[in-house]
Length: 228
Image (tube, rainbow, N blue to C red; front, side, top):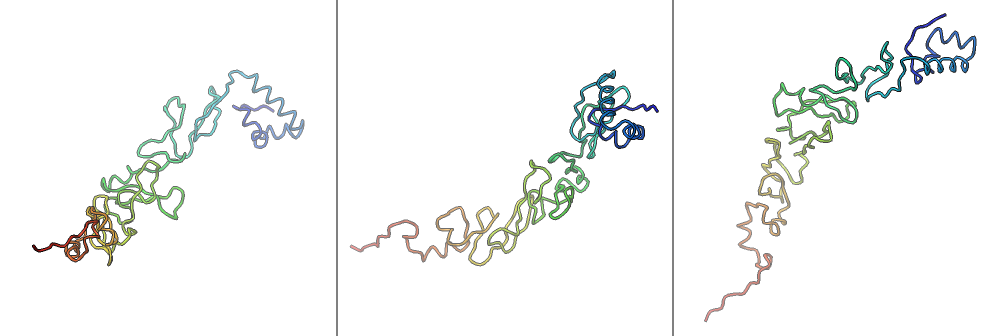
């Protein structure tokens, strides 16, 4: 019996288990004998080559090209006619060796929308999030798809915050919990007692309270005026 196949040494063990002719030959002559015969045939065949395959590919021995391959994981062969590698075409991107759908797929929703990972979802789960306005993903994804993407801020988790919103990708505080005051840039809340030693923190009640505060709290020496 004859067989016409394109075979590599690395694929020889699988070939002996799946090819009908090879299985019959092993039954008659034994596996070691058939392995030696086929190994010598492959080494002595022309043309033969030492193949190096790109990432995200599986070998396919093609007539005239013993180092042929097909791309996997959604990757595309490049260049198309005589490919040498596997690439991710836009709007896709590569993250941790896998093809991910990038923010380009959310473009139809507007420039403020970004593709973000989903907590508790699958390895490739994603959703479109308005990172310019989302309270829990403000300024970026809470779970970015790539290590180069900014991590968003959870505005609702800011200490001392009672009322907050996300505007243009930044947390904006409208009201703080009792005992707290907003920072001067309005992006957070701090305890009131910190406003004395941190002048960059705004306290709307500080001017009134300052009138009754001892001068020593400001690091000043209080010298009472004396009449002549």
